[in-house]
Image (tube, rainbow, N blue to C red; front, side, top):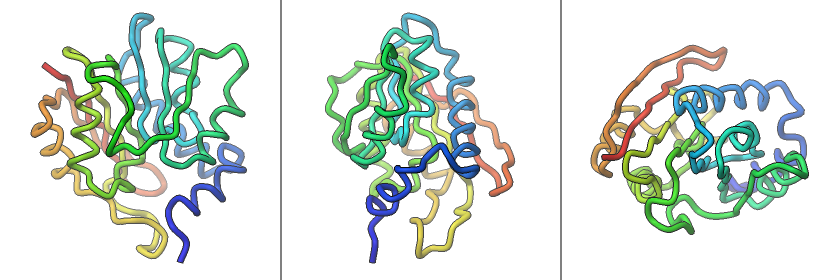
Length: 192
C-alpha cells in the first residue's frame, strides 16, 4: 500500500498544473489574508507542498520559509520559486521543526493538519516556533473529500482549537467557508 509520502511524491511532478491543486492553493491565500503580513514578519508555512503560499509571502515578509516532510514537494517548491525570491524551502517533519523557539512572527498551516500523525504534537511545534505576539493561521477542510483509503480522516475542528489553546495560542478569529469539496475553516490565533 502506498504511503502518503508516496502519493505526494507522485503528485509533486505536476502540482500546480492541475485544477485541483490550483483550487487548493487558493485556500493558502485565505491564510495570508488572515495573517496580514508586513515587511518585518518572519513567515513559515508548515506543510507547504509546492510553496504556493510561500512565494507570495516572500514578496511581503522579510523572511519566508516553507517546510514539508515530502522531499519531492520541496524540490517542486524550489523549481517554482523565482531565482530572486526570498523564499526558502526545508524538508522537515512538523513534529520536530528544525527552528529555534520564537523564530517566526507569522505561521500558516493550510490543508496539512489532516495528514499529521499527532495533531497535538504538530500544533505544539508550530506554537513553539511562533514568536511572542506572533500569529498562527490554520486552514483545513471540515470533512475529508477523499475515500478513507486515500487520505487520513480530517482532524475534528474542535480538536484543532483545543490543541491551539493547550499550546499557549489564543484563537482570535474563526470562520467557515465553502468549496466544491465542502466546508473548510480558517482559524487565526495569537501567542501571548
